Picture 1 (cartoon, one colour):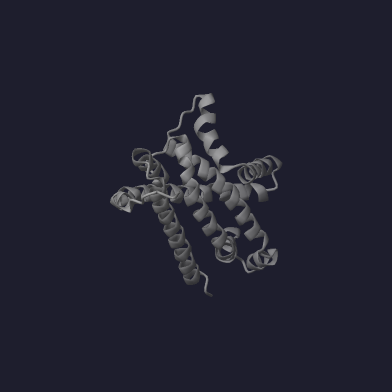
Picture 2 (cartoon, one colour):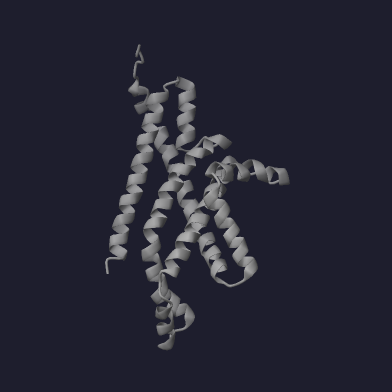
Length: 221
C-alpha cells in the first residue's frame, strides 16, 4: 500500500540552504569551464603544432577525458593523487576532475571548429598584409567562436550536472551535498531530491537560454 505522507513544508523551509548550495554548484561549474577553456586552447595548439610529443600529450588527454567516467576522473584527483602525497580538498578535487573533463571535450570542439574554417581565409588575410596574430584574431577566431559556442554551452550544462558527483568525495557545500545532508537528517528523500532536481533543471535552462540570447547578439551577422 502507498502510505507515504508528503511533507513539502520541510523542503520549502530548507530552500534558502539549497539555493546557497546552488550558488556553490554554479561557481564550480563556471570555474571548471574557465580552466577547461584555457587548457583546451593549449591542447588544441598542441594538436595542430606538428610536434609529435605535444600532439601525443594532447591526444592522450582528450582520449582519457572523453572515454572514461567523470566519476573516475574526480576519484583520481581526490584519491589517486593521494598516493603521491598530493591531498586535495573535496572542493578542489571536484573542480580539478570537472575541469579535466571539460578540457578534453572543449579541445575537440575547438579543433573541429578550426578545421571547419578554410585555410584560404587565413592565406587571403596574410596576402593583404595582416600579421598571423591579427589574421587569427580578426578572421579565424570569430568564426571559431560561432562554431564552438553552442557545443561549449552544452558542456557548461554538463559541468553543472557533474558537480553532483562531489558527494562521493565528501563535498557537502554544493547543491547535491546539502541535499544529501538534509535527507540524512530528515529521511524526506523524495521531497528534498525532487526540490534539488528542479533547481538543477532551472539552472541548466537558465544557462541554455542565456547562451542562446548571447549567441544571437554576438553572431547574428
